[in-house]
Image 1 (cartoon, rainbow, N blue to C red):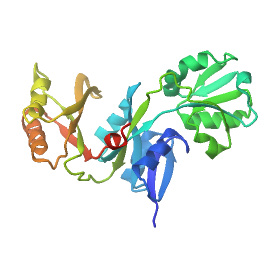
Image 2: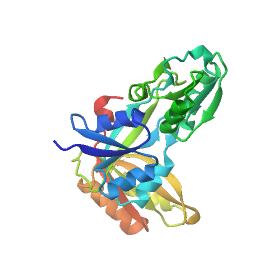
Image 3: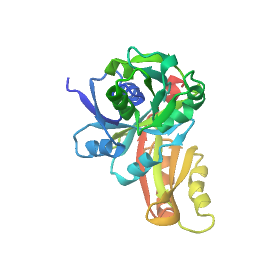
Image 4: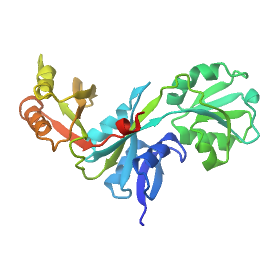
Length: 282
């Protein structure tokens, strides 16, 4: 069986690796690591990889805005969605002891949810931030100092022969990240799917209200809407929306057509897909 090549940003063993496994249960997969999210998207565009698995939103920190911009720019589609509980561990070299740690390496997202724990560590270590878990692992291995530790997923340990010094160190236990599966072609998830779209509105009073009315009129659940600045038009915005239902559902199709024809100068459907959140009860 030919392996499915799945692009992701980060290190082997990071939380995205878990998301990939959840997105393709029972499949032969080959995770392919890239330094940036844009490189992961481009790997799918150029057919170097079959899919990408990309974090889109964290329950404590909010949306990954750069990835929403990438979705709007690239001609790729969301074809699936998985939720991963996020747990962080303090990780060091095999001979490290927690009471001796003087430096902790972490990416800013992990720092923001583990800050209280790190402040209360016995050695009051210095905190150094890096771009991602991959950078933390690289620095930890390069320093080769038992007084240095990093914050990351404990599954990183098995990939890099490291040690878990403490686990579940996040300050808030209910921490989830929502990941999207990205592909070159859209899918039809059936009536139980959800749809994500991005659009602009006319720059006049009531424009967004009128745009959203197309869903209310048809009793379509609007589960999320978020505005982001238009990069080339200061103080004007585009809107990302998640709605219940697939574009193949007649009322959803009608609503999007009305939105595009009368209220949205520019609109793109980013995909209809199934989400695993409900069936996993996370």
